[in-house]
Image (tube, rainbow, N blue to C red):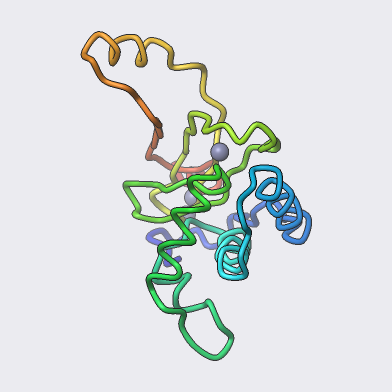
Length: 164
Ligand SMILES: [Zn+2]
Ligand SMILES: [Zn+2]
Ligand SMILES: [Zn+2]
C-alpha cells in the first residue's frame, strides 16, 4: 500500500494472525454447516488472512499459486462462498475483502460489520456495532428485508494522525 503521507516511522504492524488456527476453525465451521471447504476456498481465505490490508480480488488471483495466477471465476466463487459463510467481509468503497475480525463464527450469523478505514495507510479495523434494529424496522415499513449492513467510516488511524 503506497503512503500518501511522509510519516513513515509510524507503527502500522497489524496484530499477528494465527493463520493455521483460523484455517482450522474455518474448516470446522464449514463441516458443521455441511459445506465443503475446498482447496481453492481455503487458499483464498489464507491469502486474505495473510494480507495486512483489504485485498482486491485481482490480488488474490495473482498470488494464488507460487508460479502463476488462478482462474478468475475460481477466485470469485471462493470469495462469495467465504462471504456467505461470514468468514470475510467485502468493503464496498474499496472493492476489497478482509477476514472477519469477530472471534466467534460458531453461530454462522452475518453480524453487522463496521469498519474504520484509514485514507492514509489503507488499514482497516473491524469494530462491533450496536444492533441496528431501527434500520430493520424502518426497512420493514417500506416492505424491505435487510440482508446485511456494512458501515464504512473513512478517516485517519491513530498512527497517521500523529502529524495533526
Ligand atoms: Zn465480521
Ligand atoms: Zn493510517
Ligand atoms: Zn500514514
